[in-house]
Image 1 (cartoon, rainbow, N blue to C red):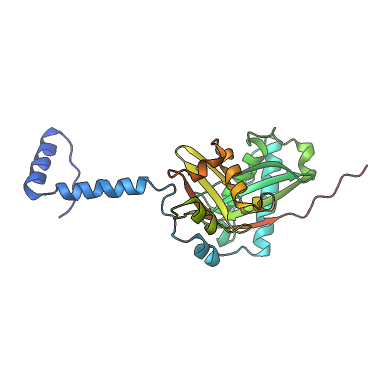
Image 2: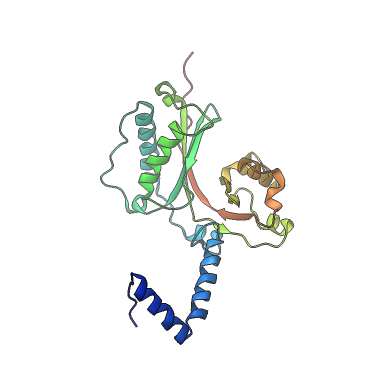
Length: 250
């Protein structure tokens, strides 16, 4: 039977009458359960195993990485000078694929901005442009980047696999599933959401402290990751950066 759209009071009443006669109620209830199950997921269409996806995810070539880093630097320069973002006409197929990424800026070893997407929404090259500009101008933790800082900035790009929710019955089981140095971690409870890229493990190698700090970043109490309502997802990242910028001459 073909599905038809209906409008108006009479067709709807007729449809409801037919539903009662033909016993469609159970099918509708199943649909509701299915939708409720989908709504409970913190991220839609996430694979069951992030590590498996990371192992098969295409890695960018050295030339593609260089192109992405140069594009990020041009985007930051245009943002700092309040001019239009760079135009891109031809890119490699890998850079035209929809992928999530973060752009991280550091200056003299200190964080200067970090903004990104957790899910693939736009082509990678476009995500690099958007996140580079946003890291330069709109990271709420920092003042906007000034043109005079550009030569002192180091740019790092992290291309993310899709986050996959972990299944666990206790905090201890969750801790056993985390892989320091490999997993990016996404924490969510209610409207509170925060992530740490895999590189953060170098600063916080202890699993408990890592999750405590992540919960705090989300605006929760440190132990909120132990809450039964909390969800923890992991992803992997292909990260690459520019060479260290030259120190200014005295």
